[in-house]
Image (cartoon, rainbow, N blue to C red):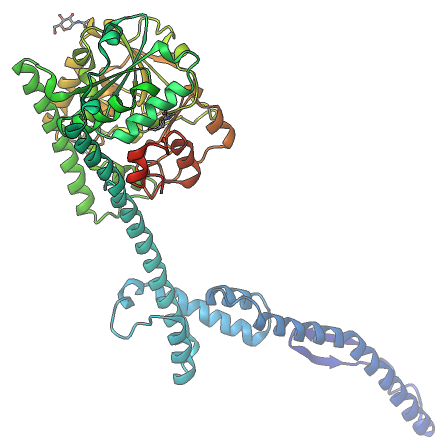
Length: 533
Ligand SMILES: *[C@@H]1O[C@H](CO)[C@@H](O)[C@H](O)[C@H]1NC(C)=O
Ligand SMILES: *[C@@H]1O[C@H](CO)[C@@H](O)[C@H](O)[C@H]1NC(C)=O
Ligand SMILES: *[C@@H]1O[C@H](CO)[C@@H](O)[C@H](O)[C@H]1NC(C)=O
C-alpha cells in the first residue's frame, strides 16, 4: 500500500493487495466482499486519520498567510515562495520572473505620466482592471521604488534644512545685543572701565590663569566665563580676555561692565582697537581670502553634485558651509601670540563650550616643550578618536598631504587648548600656516575641507601635547552625537562643536540644559529678551 501525499492534498492512493484476488475460489465471494468492504473502510479511516491533520494544517497556513504581513507586498510574495503548493509555486515563479525582468527599466517608469502616487491607487488599479500577476509585479515595484526615492530625497532635504537652520541668529540674541548697545549709550555704568583700574595690572601678570575667548556672541561669552568661575576652586586666580569685533564691542563691554561684581577680572577688546602694522593686515586679509576660496570651491562641488554626496560625509560637508567658518574671529587664533604680546601662556576656549571643572590644573599642565596642549587620544577604545581622523579633513590622494600626515591618526580637538605662547614665538608656526594656505591655492584648493583646523594641524605638526581626554568632550552640537551621561558629567569642558549650538532651537534639549544652567535668568536683559523662554 502506498500513499502519495502533497501539500495540496492526496493526489493518489494506490492500494495493492498482493494475493488478495487469487487465493480464494468463487464460493466464498459474499464473505470475501464483506470482508473486503470492512477492510476498505478501516483503510479509508486510517488514510483519513493520517491525511486530515495535513489538510487542516495546510488550511490553517493559508488562512494565516493571507492575514499576515501586508507591511510590504514584496515580503508577502516572498512568503508565498516557500509555501510549497503547485499553484502558489507557479505564481511565485512568475512573480519572481516579472520582478527580475522589471529591474531593467526601473528608473524610467518613475515620474512618468500614469505612475502611481499611493498604495490606494495601486489597489484600485489592480482590482478595477483585473491585471495579471506580471502587471501587478511591475506596478508594485515601480511604486516601491518611487516611494523609496521620495524617502531618500526627504532625508536629504531635512538634513540640508537642519543645517540651514543653524546659520541664523535667534531673535533673542539680536535683542540682547541691541538692548546692551542702547544701555551703553545711556548708562554710564555700562561704559565703566573694564577691568576697573585697580585690577589692570592683573591683565599681564603671569601668576594668574589667563583665559582667552574670541567671540561675537555676548551670551555665549557670559556662559563660558560664569561656568569657569562657578566651578573654579579659586575664582580670583582667573583673568578673562574677550576679543570681539567692532560691532559687538559695545554690547560686550556693557554686559561685563554691568556684571563685573559677579565675575572676576574681564577684559573686553575690540579688533578695531589693535594697531597692527600694515603687513600684518595684509597677511590677515590674504588668509581670509584663501579660506573663502576653499569654501567656495567646496560649496560649488556640493551644488554640482546636487548635495547627493556619499553617505556618512554629509554632515561634515554641510557643516563646513556654515558662514561662521569664514568669520574673521574664527581664523584669528593663528595670530594669538600677536593679540597678546605680553602673555606667555593662555587657555583658549571657544564660545560654544561650558566648563564643568576647575581649570587650574589644565593651566599648570606641563607641555613638555610643545606649543599646544590638546585632546587627541581616544577615550573610546582602540580604533576610535575623540574627534575626527586626519582622513576626514584632508585629501590623502594628494602627495603633499600623504607625505606629511598619516590618515588614520586622530586629529586634535580645537576649542579647548593650552598654548605656550613663548614657545610659539620661537617657532615659525604662523608662517608655516600661511605657506600651507598658499600651497593649497597652488594645488587647486583640494588639499582639505574648509575650516581653520586643517592648516592648523599641519602647522602645529610635532608640537602638540596630548591632554587627558576627560578635559574636552566635543561634538555635542552634532546630529549624531552619542555620549553616556557619565561622560557628560565627568568632562571638564563640554564643547558644542557642530551646527546645533545650545542657543539654537535645533540643539538637543538634554545637553542644552547643561549650558542654560549658566545663563543668569534673573538678569534683566535676559528676561527682557526672553532668552530663557
Ligand atoms: C624659521 O624660519 C627661518 C627662515 O625661514 C629659519 O631661518 C628658522 O630656522 C626657522 N625657525 C624655526 C624654529 O624653524
Ligand atoms: C584630491 O586630490 C587629487 C590629486 O590632486 C585630486 O585629483 C582630487 O580631485 C582631490 N579630491 C578632492 C575631493 O578634492
Ligand atoms: C544674576 O543677575 C543678577 C541681576 O543682574 C545679579 O544680581 C546676580 O549676581 C547674577 N548672578 C550671577 C551668578 O551672575
